[in-house]
Length: 150
Image 1 (cartoon, one colour):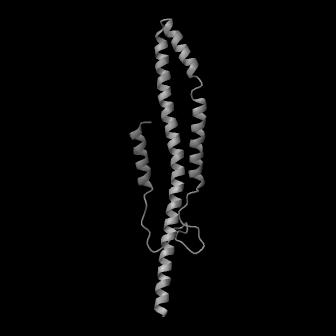
Image 2: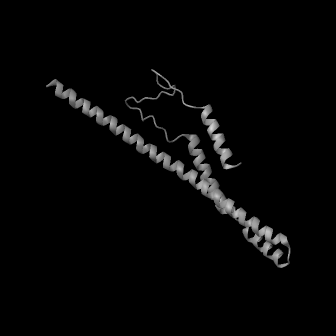
Image 3: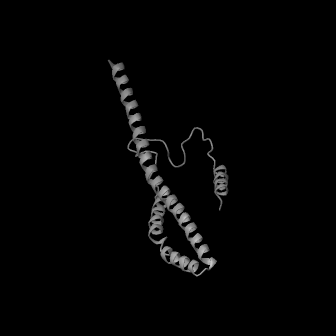
């Protein structure tokens, strides 16, 4: 699948599930904060964790097993080239292309896994910032209330 084809599929999916305006009510999931509630931002969703874990496992397995045939392929390519078979050069070229594709896949898996970790930490930071800001506003309101009572 070509990159632009992938981008078009993502764009089409996003248009189908676009956000709609909701007035005078909370989302069905029960958004909004209340006393004792942990917060609205969720970073430990099982589906996102599964994606990150799968990407990490694929990264490890590909890194360990993705080059198993490299040595024997290079030996075969060299032997075939020495014997003046054109297949030797083709096998060498195929091995180089495999290496480039393998590296691209390893990079993508690492990016996905690292992004999941980064997203979780970023949302935890956002949650802390929001909670401290709301707490600060509550303290400020309390101060105004005390001042008005005097």
